[in-house]
Length: 157
Image 1 (cartoon, rainbow, N blue to C red):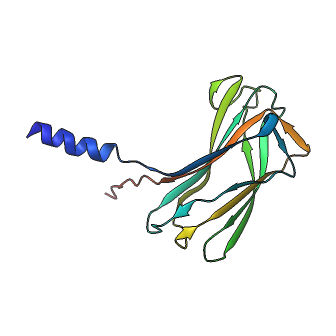
Image 2: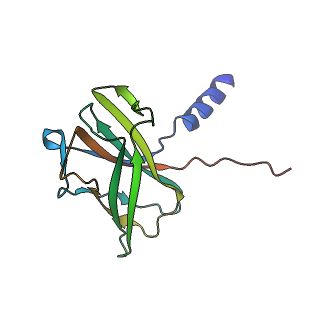
Image 3: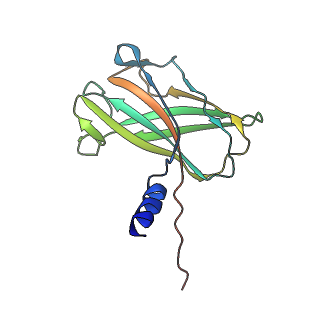
């Protein structure tokens, strides 16, 4: 009986939460201002609450403590959402945020938290860097990820 309980709880604990994750390497580790990155996740279950985020992989050649992004999301029903977002890659002290070595640091950013997507099908995410520099050095790769949001029951006593 104990083995059955361990199996059941282990199965649910190991449930895959990642729905989509794709990355793009940047040629020469430079992100040009005119270079738009495209991602095409197909979401079938729109009843699921999800988190949407980005992973930014850079090295010590990245010259800033932040990154401005222009983000467009086209849903399967034709609805377009446009955002301008600022994300941080370093503390005010200059210390890099994220995981990894100084020559390959990965920062994870939450873009949308606990959302339900409005229509099933293929979405189009387009992301352009919005920094003042035409060629942004030190950018190794950029990822889009979508994961199931973890719901927590709250006690209202």
